[in-house]
Length: 306
Length: 306
Image (tube, rainbow over all chains, first blue to last red):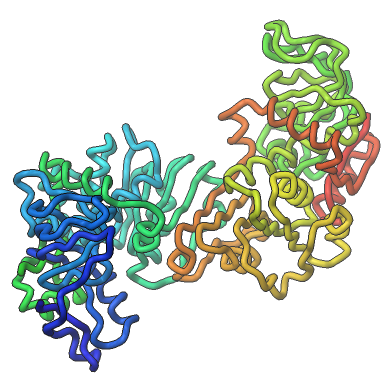
């Protein structure tokens, strides 16, 4: 099969190579890949491995060989899920506890945008707990996860407020009926129950201090790579407040994602969750798609079709 | 009855006055007060109220009139609990859901040291969740709450490490079989599962970064009144980490404390929890006891006998 691998010389990015077909473990299904997504996590993981390593988490395609242990969907099922940094290939062996069947009408090119970003949003909101009637402020809302947070918050009965740099970068949120607050110079002037943050720095601080008593902040990234700084009364001024960190790649080691993936794909089928794909390209153009993501020229998700 | 009230001129502290006996609400027992404790919270609460206001949370004594609604212990029962900033008096009306009977052998002068500090320690550790086999680092361990945290952590199956300024200030911990780390210049050189902090500033930061993946930090105070500052990888480097704030006066508004108080007094009776009373005085000397507390001349709790 053809697969992307990292280059010997990192500055040259990734390249397509011919590799032996993967041999699935007993709990893995063999998937013929139709679409993958590009995540920062893919690149971080790849950078930690030796040159020539495969990459790619998000995967959508069709099962060509069911798992030997009888778990997961049968051959012929359209599926999507999380591969172990091996999805950017024509074939991928995927653990069945990280795979779910796609409902009718959910195309691979949409489904591939979901696993990493959708599970991140889902697990971040789960940390907050009860959502019905609550308000959720999501920072960096133009990023790949922002739209998922807003849609999932709404699906769970909350109202979402997306904080973006400009109104344009929040358009996919307003089109979905979510409110946005544009501009990082001034924070939104309202109290919220939940903050979902991936920006860090002063944006996180300004969001955190909007939390009501009993509020929860969940952080899953730190774009600005700055210290976390909160004022001395961070807790005392908002009794019972809580701050949690979510690291998806750790989280999925601790529990099976299959059922949560099925929940996400079901919401997509019902249009209660709409992945915002900001860039769609052929996988031959992976390099330029990666560049667009790293330079923040894309809002939403980047998907590559095979 | 005689009761302490705040002075018109705050710099003159508090003074004894004759007040009408309290008239208990239906859910309150009338308690003849035998001992009270001095908490920073008493002074903070009093400072927010007009001059001439009563003060005092911790109370131990004997029920002289059971609650009219039939709840709580009958007249004649030795009890201790939390009064609504009215305990520094000969008589106090105390909600029965914030009161518990004292087991044999638990004297009022010991029991009075328990409610505020013991519930703070208990609720802080409850936020951490599972403790059996885990390790708990408690900063500011020479303060009123430190010894409770260490004893309760041990009672729940954890090992406690108390962080104090000097070995002398941690003696009450080592005497109870807990380990201490003395000196705030250098942090303890070991990973922990739980941090209970009331110091803030660099001490909190240095404690927090010792947390293992999945660790929990619970903050219930901020002695140094500094910003909370954590390094950019605060979460990423310790997956699933959580930070919570506990404000006891808010917490007790949300749930009855009676059963938790009974738990604490039961542990005291069994000597699994030993209140460290650093200063015991007659309530006539309340002013100098307060001074000793504020100037940090006392390790542990300050109790006044009537």
